[in-house]
Length: 189
Ligand code: AR6
Image (cartoon, rainbow, N blue to C red; front, side):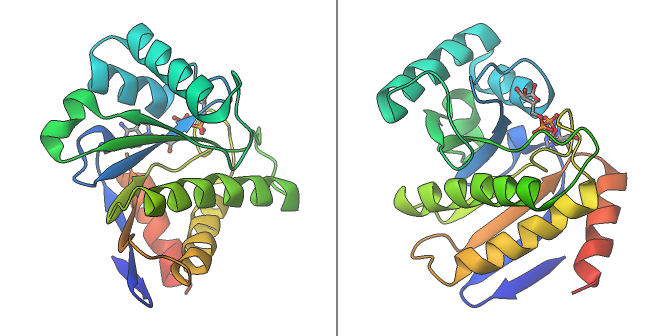
């Protein structure tokens, strides 16, 4: 299932993002890049084999790229794909979405938009053509899944007007159920 916004294609896919064929994959991180659970743990494990080591690499990259040991919504850190290069992945872009705990409001939406846009802009800067996102904040951070998908749609459409390099944006859903729920949201459009 895909939508076209000008030069850019937005696609919903089902699968494991750690082996998804895109030049950049995005991690739904926390602000300290402690990849303790969810997709963050899965990416760290798949990329390096050693989660502690990938956390160390991430924190070192954060100091170099941001100059502090935490990031705000909208700030991103790039780490090498290491073992994920076998799938054609070149970069992992870490971004932090809002914590919702089941609630949703304009502030959460703005924070999620910033998190998505930050990763898209960085991918454009890195001259990446394809980028894959997990459903940021829809897991441990407890944001309502449908709202997360709607926010992706809006943000990607907004970004499509300024993109120079990014041509394909994927939202990769881990479960079949999430994939089907996301398709329903897309059909609203
Ligand atoms: N591929 C694609 N999607 C996945 C995968 C995978 N391999 N594994 C999980 N998901 P979450 P958050 C989906 O909890 O809500 C971490 O501890 C999952 O089903 O990973 O932003 C971080 O370090 C869900 O739909 O991220 C933070 O502390 C989506 O990825 C915190 O969790 C996001 O779920 C961030 O929480």
